[in-house]
Length: 198
Image (tube, rainbow, N blue to C red):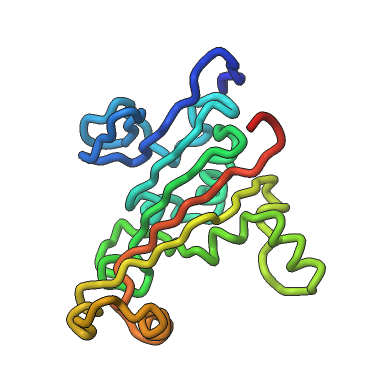
């Protein structure tokens, strides 16, 4: 049974799928190794109370979770449930057109900014009004996340191809649309939008 919200307990900060990279001030969670809490993140529901978490870090984790759509979408719903209004979720993933993503057999899902924006209810409503054929998953699942930051990390290959500094951002973005191995990883921050405090 899931714990109910406890207003007297300070909010948690979760480092999910921490591996060997434990973070001070966070509850470090993983299925393997020596985390603070041993937990299979694909086993739902999670043990935390509604609105009990102020921050989640998923550093090179989300691409390993949810081989089936049902499990992946369940994980998205669990993150929303446990997060308090205004909570931040920091996500770092390999770019799906980089060899780091393609070569690892435990990578089960490409995670992209566009894919995560499908969980933004404001955008969902705009798409419906405009008649656009995008999946309105935020409205369908009852979750709402706003993308507040996206950063694309250039790969070593791209730096070898373009060693000049500062980086030509326009050229980088243009080449990232057509060439593999240009972007090494994507860092994104989601803000949890829900009624309530904060």
